[in-house]
View 1 (cartoon, rainbow, N blue to C red):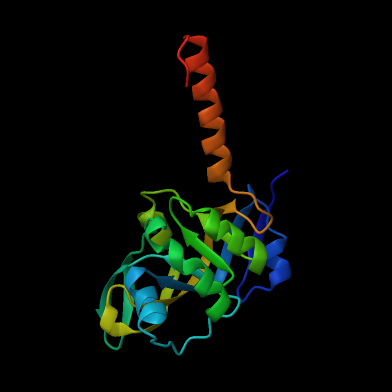
View 2 (cartoon, rainbow, N blue to C red; view 1 turned 60 degrees about the vertical axis):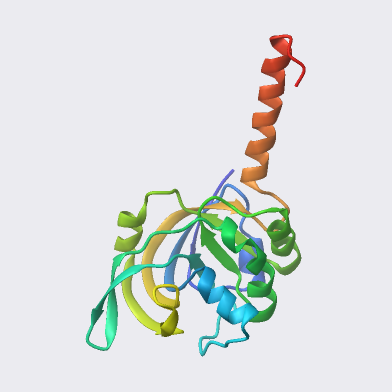
Length: 198
């Protein structure tokens, strides 16, 4: 039976391993926004960040923001497709200590293996939810690698961010892969019934 977990980062490995595929998560506290250029800068070009990401949660996003004096306020913070950033899952966890990735559309078996080995999960957001996601963000607390704007490293303070679906857990389960297999099995059964060899 699925459960709803209310979590505040930083998260321990034990807290993350308690999450099972199908559970829901609601977050309070810090959340870090990253995207392609952020991770290319960190892992391909050797740049560093002043943020400590150990035990933290990152979200795949490049937000639309408004500058206010020395800071920023969120205008639209939507989750982007994760597949483009697949190759960064393991370095995010191994080198920076990230525990949780929030994204859209899922990640591959390589990321699932990293979650299993290192104690991480993938939380899914439905596409088209930027308007409601933005309401969960109380403020943009800080930003690093600002020259990459809008794909810099954002630090948000969130309240009631979710519920998000645990779509890939640290025990080898991926709801995406389970659904894919179920669809293939159903397709093959229908084709067989029609006398077509799948």
